[in-house]
Length: 393
Length: 185
Figure 1 (cartoon, chains in turn purple, brown):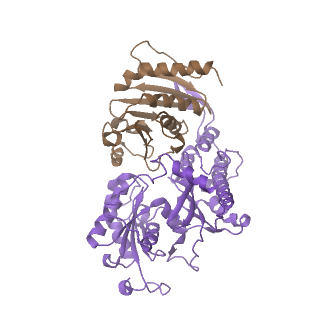
Figure 2 (cartoon, helix red, strand yellow):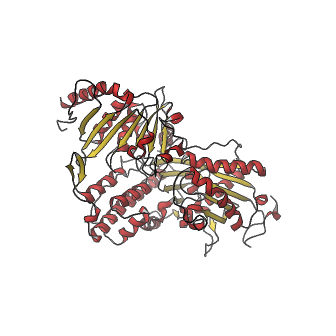
Figure 3 (cartoon, chains in turn yellow, purple):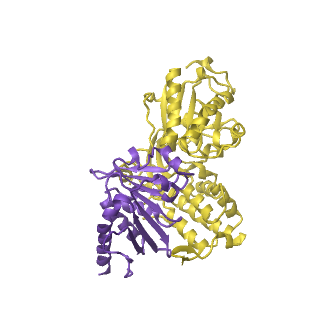
């Protein structure tokens, strides 16, 4: 690597510098970032939050790929500008190419392909969900205290977001095995739907969290743990149970089923208590499965050294609290919880994980495809997962 | 098990385009869906309409069962909008779409949807949740399934056939009647 490539932005950085430009468009966020050596986040731009809002007079989060198209170039430009980097200084182009919304993924993948081709740089496709579990290894400029240590392996990974609720056994940043996933709604999706049921408005997750903190979990709601060995999640029953607690019984009216009431007839306190009851059940189910996975990995002779969490639901206050309490019970496990901007969808995690691939000389052809599903999750018969679980137990 | 599982109503002898029933468990809802899936051909569209928690995703799980796909693989595509599932044999694959987050029919085109399904539906049975939000794009041959809350475990299911689905309604209602009779023994 060329030592002169980049003016040392931080005296603590090592002499050998590898700069990767990451691009992420798998869902609603158009994101670009520059990460040095898979560790130091030099810039982390997410367009649908607020960075570009002024420029476009308020970006409405929408999923259409043309929204990504409009935003991708300014986002990449801003990521370079903020990291004081030029295209020439970039060593590789990384892109989240799976899983996600295909039309959206294609925008990022096409941009990355064009850049890699025109700049003659390596192209690296990254799994979005695996990247969420790399976020905890990144250091931002805003980290005021000493940089966090890196996770020790084997580790247990939990990804909790709007689209994912998955547990992984992690042998190294690039070697992950799916242990369990949601069989219906993802936990973030359950939060969003709970917010609709409780009429708490957008954004659902944070609003339910806020209401829950003002209430008490007075209503028992089901925590679906499935069968006793399962590491899969299920949140659909919790959603429906909440619906019935909030809206009462359905009644036939003009041949159409309606409910006897809705959330507007609840007092603030009742609504907050139901939000707290939902939050207690949802996070309780996540923690139960994490503990179950720790036991199973332990039993299989690969006790996790670290618990790594990623995904937007990491922002949830009760989940953070409960996760941080885990080492009291499981002494030798260190918990890695990334700072919030790195929990949400971002491109820094893409560029970060790509460094690990580059380090192992794993780069992709320019024909890198965008894939809606991660192989082994939906577009197959699930056998990979079950075969692996057998190997574990 | 309650006696009256599938409460057939108003079934004329010929030209049936509508069928109504009531299920008392998720499993019964899945059985109806599996029956529909076994009658489905490549390119067929099943539109699901119903409130949160009405059982739309559960219904798709039943469709998977009928298509020879492991139903435990089915999860909600609310966030990524669509999932595709393959099976081991030559039966149609399943494309599972959720229009919950779509702001209009044109956004369905962003996942590669064309009127009548296009390439996305060529080898697949397409199940679309919140189909009422994208109704104008679904084409003229759709089986619409309305799921309504009756009680916590009970759902009213209304099936409405449009286009080529109409020609299968008679055998479909027959198949569902057989199920009812077997269950009542």
